[in-house]
Length: 430
Image (cartoon, rainbow, N blue to C red; front, top):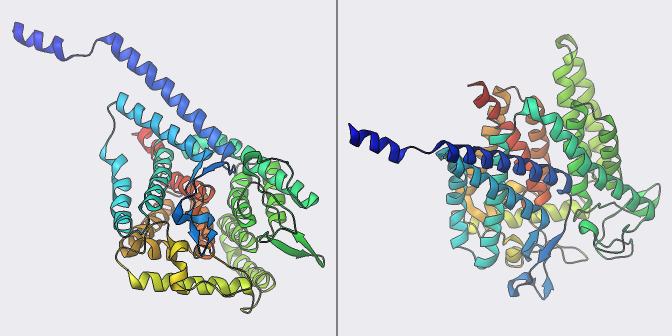
């Protein structure tokens, strides 16, 4: 009897230690949300520390996509995940569900790490992907869509708002706004080689970048977030984001936004009017496509086709492991650089083709399964806004690469997937 009492006294945790552990758990949880809201505001930032390696050059030219970078945003994500891991340890609630998806992705990508011709670039790329996957897991575990989305949209509107206003001023001035690298704003002048320009009322003008590496990223961010702001009644934020979308002159982003608005409208239109709504919307949609997209002789279109052909050749040459994670541009000279007046070394403008080329068949299957599961789960749980956002992201991912190659794109993708798979509301109900 005495031994049993002594055994209980030895194993039981003193009450003051339980209170202290609960206190620190609460403080860590608050710290996580502060960092999360900071990420929502600063995610457009392109501030990063660049590392120039001998393998970062292609034909004597420094290739941006072969430069390992340490972004301010990803540092914040690392702090968020570190605090999250500490809280799970404090509460002894670290379970298999937190490890399954990261472990599955690691297994899918590991063969491409072994096949890599530059281990340093591939290893850092793997760490980056795992980091953003962990960010999506944090959103899944901690965000209650019904309760938290209004507040999230508010902080997100600050981030989208300041970068859209910066882009508007860039367009009006036709140059970068700040004389220094403010939050990653690039140096912009219409005369600079490689700067994105377009024709506007018969004049060649500079497309606005904001702080992003390309105007298409600015357009994609606006296209995804405008429906979110409209859904929560943030009309001013939606209007400012639309200005950013306009000065980006991103045709694909406009089509993506129209797709999202069309799906939202279809959901809200009464059943008897849906057929007319679909017919009118499709007519407007394809008419817009005709005017927005040039014929196949356009240099941009032909280059993207050539990149797809190179991606297929890479996949065909090593379909199990791929040519190496993060090494598409490094391998491009061996499979065909797109023709044109200037050297065009970029990843293939299709995230699924990029995954297949760099990481092989298994990684592609896991990537497609993740998207399919998100569609099924989102529809089943009636998370229609996020379901439609995923459809927009899929469209963007079919014709561009930044959702997989840039931190701003990975932020949008992991945030949306985290929203779709969000389970905190179910846990509270149970």
